[in-house]
Length: 34
Image (cartoon, rainbow, N blue to C red; front, side, top):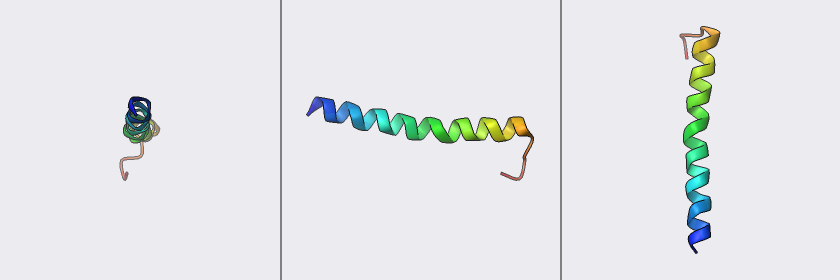
């Protein structure tokens, strides 16, 4: 049960980190429209 919860948290953290990386990449590429 605890392992399943950790898996969920890990997935949530990945989902949270992905958009941040996308935003940083877009900012670096100089695309202010997104």
